[in-house]
Image 1 (tube, rainbow, N blue to C red):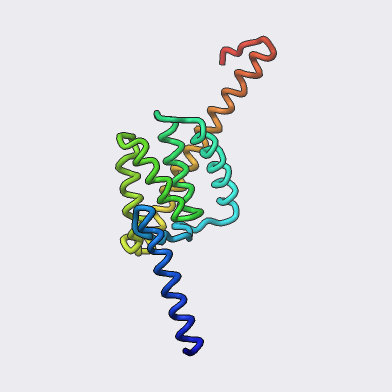
Image 2 (cartoon, rainbow, N blue to C red):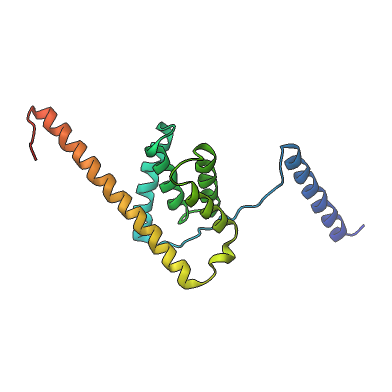
Length: 166
């Protein structure tokens, strides 16, 4: 038997074994794309990482409710710039854990879009969608920054014993 035939048989056996294990674990094997759905430049990456870190912390402490819905949805939007498979996972978790959330329709649309990227093959549409996502993320970041600034001001006022009537 030649080396090529042996290598081919070995590859078929390994592939079959992996597929069998997947079937035993209760499902079909799906390869998720690991590339980012949107590209980001260096300055955006730093901001996106800061947003992702804060959402990760929020997701670990929340169970349900608006703050938890926000954390999952915003984390899913950030994942669009990092790893498409992660974005799919986050949107699926949002949809499954909180099916009646205010982001239900958006999560389902993102899942369809991410699993069928041919539907956004037009460059102009993709650029517009990217800008809308960035706008949403930056608006969220601004609200979070303002909220944390107000909380910090209250803590400072409490620590100094004075209250501002601003």
